Image (cartoon, rainbow, N blue to C red; front, top):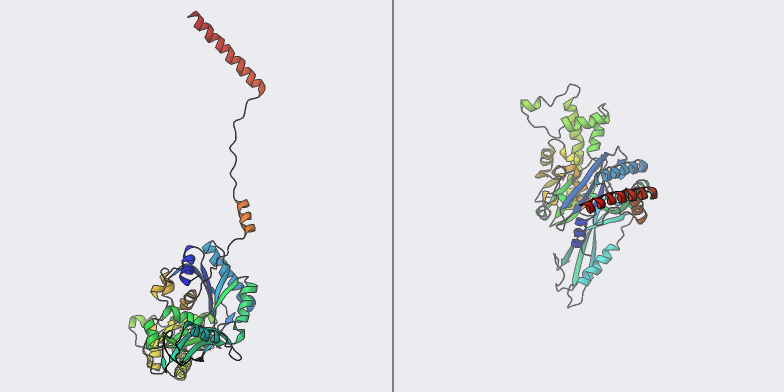
Length: 439
């Protein structure tokens, strides 16, 4: 069955369900996709992680399972339907890209065929990186006559090379996810999706990927950097610092975590700019040393940006990213962050969320950078995640339905009453007959 038919079926019945396991929030979305891959959200919910997930990895299995179960129940109550399985985000600081090259020698009069491409793809699927697990093959670039060839089938050549961009990480990333969702939350996992790829898929334009851009997803526990050029992913790495790291730094100023988070989002700045008297009057609070608060924020953000700059250099694409920086994620909403990045990296900056053409309802989700990854997961979902009732359950439901009550029949008179009415009828008959004779 081709993908368009699958999408059409999803439009008629069933749905796709996804869970984004974030360090700060666990987000769940249920949606459908039409034949054009446009998403219609049916329900969404969020629960606090409370640090049961750390730097994108499940830390407390029992607590994570309980929170996912609560999230599933909230979604089911909205849907009035049951969820059988979910797609889950994969994250963690060990995730990174590697390039795996496969080449094939053809005959002197060789032509690249579908079979050749399929053989190379099968060889790529068999590749197992040492001490790591392959989580995704994100892109492939074919090289013929030392030049990229986007459509290799049919080209005459004696040699073809394919560079597969693979996302790899520690083998145990999904171990605790399985334990918390399968075993504790009692929900089947339909598939795993690499979080940074999901975010990029739903927020970047084709032009940005073609010109080249550094796509940065500022999460709570980690910051992922994905570099695109020529329409393909060229480099990906995860930096083990995020918005929650900044909050922890503010806690060292003798604030509890909830206050530190509130002060960061309401009063914190990553970059100082002159403000009018009207706005500056709202920027002061007696029990906060704003200069110290902002200094802490800027120091940690500087460390994150230094790491980003270093990784861009390692990619070999510094100075070749015509579309500049594209940022998303919950921590991307820190005040004046685009200015801070522009000054430090000397690149243009765009704050991104889900593309408006990808979501046909719930604009508050499409406009929220903290939901970019969760919405992006839906693009990778194909299986129907709705739980279908089994025969026994259907039978029980039928039994529970109110049964129609039989209509009460009019009570028939007894034998004695029948004889009495008969005698009376006969008496009246005789009287009327006598009258007729007299007339």
